[in-house]
Length: 256
Image (cartoon, rainbow, N blue to C red; front, top):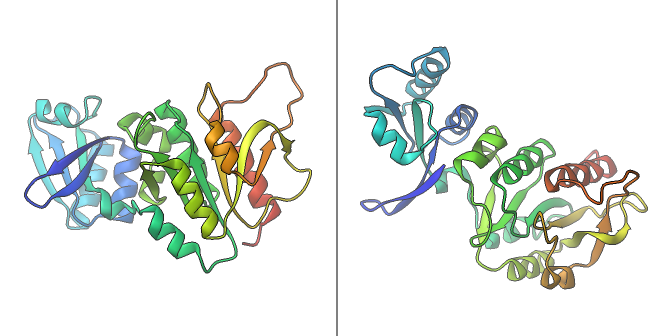
């Protein structure tokens, strides 16, 4: 998935080639989408025909283009590319999220501190949707955006889960605190997960694959938590850690 700018309507667009992501986007938020299909039929198959039928059923325009044009949108396409407006896919602002959450006494948000691997980002988003997370917050710089590789790993979850990009993670964390979120930072020095239940309205900070949560964000956290380890390796993959933390939240608050 790559971002482009439609100069006539001034609308930011994502180019998506993952079959899962295309189908889920068509089901969740088809407004303003356009489906591009490679000419010549080299990629034609039952999956592509299914997606074209889904698009036509929902009134989505389908255009046939030379394969070279699709490759400019998504180099790893498999015969289809969906152009989807960001605003139609639930890309909220941090302000909108905080306003929506301010009157609630429960909620779960993930804040990703410069995750660099798009596969990790996609896997986290996929798990976040499965565990009913309200939103995932990522920085606009020095981190993986929602690339086509991330979309493939997310398996369509980005169509349903808001992924919010912010310029300043520390400012975003402060806004979440003002909206009533208790901030946990995942850190090896923190108290053991399970020693006490996680709060009902929380944001969990997850750090960069090599450096962990940055000092400035750890200083902003209300509490540090760690996942107990019993083997020989020092740490878990960040997407695995995220899934464990989300599961623990849902285990503690199963009825929320």
